[in-house]
Image: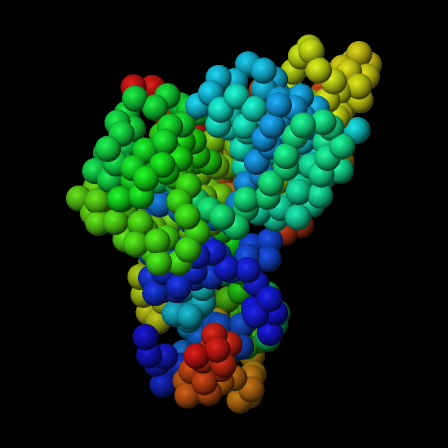
Length: 129
Length: 375
């Protein structure tokens, strides 16, 4: 599956799509595929402060737990609470299933992230293909 | 990369051709999942799934002294086995803790096959030689690399196997085995055993790659009409955990004794022969039993307990540890097996599991968590 060119990516396999000062964050298709059947999502609360590159929640499949790392610093504006009941949506469509929306503290955080070409290359290296 | 050093079963190329996700399991390059853990798990519970379990080891004890050797080596009473019958047993340390858990098969008089775990193969073989090697008239053979062992599991396993053999698998009783022609191979050992809590069979065929791959293909061709799926270690773990079956290195190890693990029913302290671990276990029994025991926990609040997570009282005192924890695919709840002091083992006792630094409430529930409906 292609990684959208309009997103930025972390090496921990989150994506972020930025519109003005709002960033929408999800996990990549590679992340969902590595995890397998996702059964549980733990998200922060609206108003929580996220620190760039630090954990803000977790995603769990039947067999594993994976921490979520924030691509940017910001304040949680909205959470996708539908995932509490239907976490498997992430497996079906990781590119379009968001976890949280944040109000960015510092737009310059984005500069340190990977673009889709760099992320694609990074994943290829990680999987050895 | 360490990958080069990993051991491979004869079906390794088959798994890779099926695009299985492979992992290092006790030094073996094994499939953890193919189409998806939940689909594989459900195939076994509802129809049929197939596992490559060739990484497991096989030790044969033969000769006029073999029963005495088996009796000394293993905690269950092998004198009760009939030819063609198998039972769950274990090799113990002198302290009554586990060297390994095993399935013992009585092939004929004076001929026994012990099926052992993959991760403990070398240790086990050495233990067997050290423990009974000097007993008279017993020949010890490590046949671990001779067999490809395939587990066909699930309510339709019997139908799949029926299409491949001239024997009638439906007449094999649970934990019994027979010999039959399977997929054109003569004298294949067909055992009604498994590690899923479901009905099923394990077959033992020659371990050459071509034969193994061909039989694997024939099983899938026969099972197609039942929606047969190849299943990996991921589903194997969730299936055995729902059935509360012990996994070496988790529920049992050389620091956990038989009574703690609730496996006393397979340990015959009253059998005529002495066995390694017996006197230590008698001492434990005579001094009031173990101080801690394995229990089943259902996580009542939101959260998934995982292996190694601490178990605490409701006020936060650490009292034990989760040995295996996972969501239950069949029952849609989160369960764990954990060691806790005996005063916390009564059903409905409330405890907490520490999940990422947060106490999450759990309660003691009966095991197995899942039990298949009796026919």
